[in-house]
Image (cartoon, rainbow, N blue to C red; front, side, top):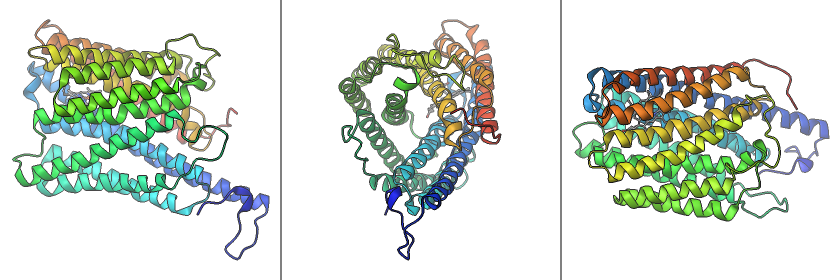
Length: 442
Ligand code: HEM
């Protein structure tokens, strides 16, 4: 069991001297940082190769043939799974493990559990990608990959469930914690549905790709039901300090969460117009709850990061609203494939990836052993390129796929290469920061 730092004793019952305690804590901090760096590095590898490289490949094929359905659905789903679970999911688990055992002080269980979960999770996600792309032994590999991912997350939940909030005079559970709990429930549901769908395909399906109608609904659960609440939770925890905003309106944030959850449930039931309307209302409520577009009370804390950081966090939330608004258009349009694609991309790249670029480069170097970000200029360039690539992609996807402007098919590859350059710069900046020691800023 964990113990307060002032009461640590050896197994023989000897009370440790303060310097012994601090060297124990330093050793533990360094082991935690190593665990976090391993998670983040794996996430970056998934993002670059199975995720972005395959996404760019798919888009180049789609634009050269000028047909959205000219690429195998299994390849598109393999790309989406690598980005959502391989990249952002691995980041979330890594940050989660880094934070929990730290709160639980010196419990040795959590660290070993963190490594076991890493092995299961990365094997599951990699197996899923290979199965989607090559189809080798997919009837066995597909459910096995889903079971490995679920097992990894159950280990994570087992670690979290032992955590009790410290008595700090604050309310026992702050609103951002409820949002993160809801996001974790969304991830658990996503992984259970994933295992059910994979098992169903293994017994009754004729290929490893999910049927399109089911995939559309399942994507709402993965993105709005799992990733969006995680980003809101981290935003509520960090943004008021980082951007100098007013304190979070906790009640409004919980209303946003309720609207969002209702939207996800409506989408799962197939009521798409109601679903996207609720998701838009939830995103607008979250913007109000966080005070993102209100005048800051204090200057933003941009020391060690690009001065554009506060601007792009706001741009990300604008993309979140645009994604939901495009969803309403798509739900009402007669032939909406390009509008759905644009809405999904506005959310995954414009909102989620831009937030990960912003908050990730703000917190990860410090978490990983008090490093500092390698280059604030590279950070700025990555943010600008990602936002520009996203704007080009979202607009040209609507114009090209919906048959509005033929020239837009030629802009799509440009958008893909712009985004690929952005993610490569982001990955390079984070990795170099991890491996390059510099004195801490604080
Ligand atoms: C270089 C950046 C990217 C490129 C070129 C790209 C390309 C594509 C393409 C061509 C599709 C097929 C559907 C369509 O045409 O809209 C697609 C779907 C998808 N993408 Fe991306 N993408 C990129 C980044 C991302 C990111 C960062 C995420 C998530 C964080 C993501 C998640 C998805 C998902 C979930 C799908 C739908 C998969 C499915 O239908 O099951 N993409 N992407």
